[in-house]
Image 1 (cartoon, rainbow, N blue to C red):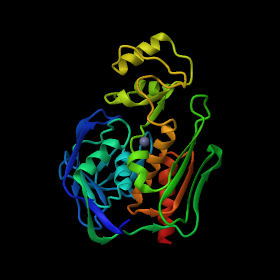
Image 2 (image 1 turned 180 degrees about the vertical axis):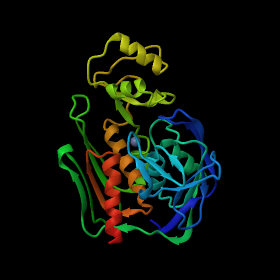
Image 3 (image 1 turned 45 degrees about the vertical axis):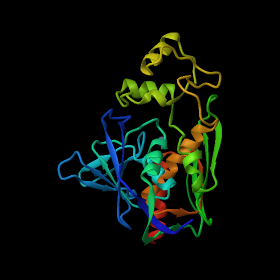
Length: 304
Ligand SMILES: [Zn+2]
């Protein structure tokens, strides 16, 4: 694999709505010069403020990672950043005419496809890898959460999830090399438990516009009335719970799709370091909070 930085050949757009804000809009990837990094430009705001994808700009990790700078914010950046990292794209300017990245089907697939369509090209500047020389780890024992980066020739990852429920116990996902990301990880969609979905809907925290593709785990008995309400929400005549505890509004692409999605999220969150990583990542029960705290530790160690 080449060690030159990459950008895209042509601008390319993705349209859609945000999961949390329900706003509809367009995201446009634009080529950017060497050492530019990944930046978002809020073209809907006066002065079109630019927000760099930088770990110092994280302002929230509730239900997604949000960054803010120069008086503007961008919600749910992790899937689009994962797509760029997965394709080895270093430099791009992302025009966005709303506050949130379109959720699409809750995966990184549509961003990967758009970027592949745009094509990539190598630039003069060399890639500036983060090389892990000593293991770096972060642990929250009371939550049984742990994340670790160890020295390795190239990036690889192993993610373990365990929600300690009957329908979603321990699951493992692995990525041997980043070249496998587009096929193995990018299509893997986000997931919710029924009780979380109800909480989000009841508190107006998701607008449901693009919920059709969410994987819903049902970890308790549900009444026919609740199923009817879900059918209405998903715009289906009827829904039921499959034996494995997943709502039948969709079929899983992989038996361990949830673990693969968490691997996608970690890659997206660590992209806020702004440089590709050479190291082996192990994450046990990761989430946006630990992922971004871990990125801050890595950054601090690099600066010390
Ligand atoms: Zn995610």
